[in-house]
Image 1 (tube, rainbow over the protein chains, first blue to last red):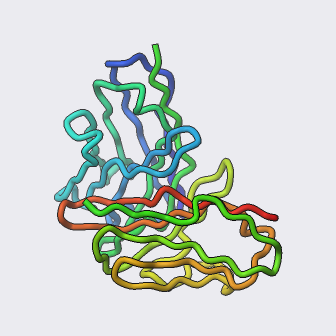
Image 2 (cartoon, chains in turn red, purple; image 1 turned 90 degrees about the horizontal axis):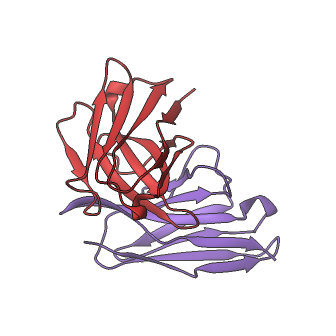
Length: 119
Length: 108
């Protein structure tokens, strides 16, 4: 069974940093591209960042470029999102989701982890 | 940057009713993808490559479209279909994924 389990969320002050993790199981992690997608409370879905299976290709939404860094450790089956210079508008439920190379959709999603940026 | 506009924003339908949700892209796209999200749950892939149903999706659902206009249709509404539906596309220039704002489908 495919499982994606996010962790690392919490309450953080504006300007501070936080690192999210997503532990994958039930599939060959190194064969899949991985993504972070967020959803502000009561709002829609917003793609945040993507990383290819071997980390060769990395893309970011303009809203987080220069502040967030996506990375992965295929030996640990884990995806990361390092978030710095956090703003109140980064408050959201952060999902990790996978995609297969060449297929531009997200076929499995985690349950999400909440990040609240507030003083 | 391609913008996806979904309509309607909210729709209420009775069991047995036919429902159509539209997603319009600001520029032509090759495929459209759809997700279903129920309250308090993660989104689920619902339709991929414009018209292919994801695993477990009932065949009362269908997807169609091309170019800048795509749609998700429920042939006969059932109570379990009440949810928010999002369309999504990928563009390579610049490389990014985009979601529509969502359509909330309620039970009448």
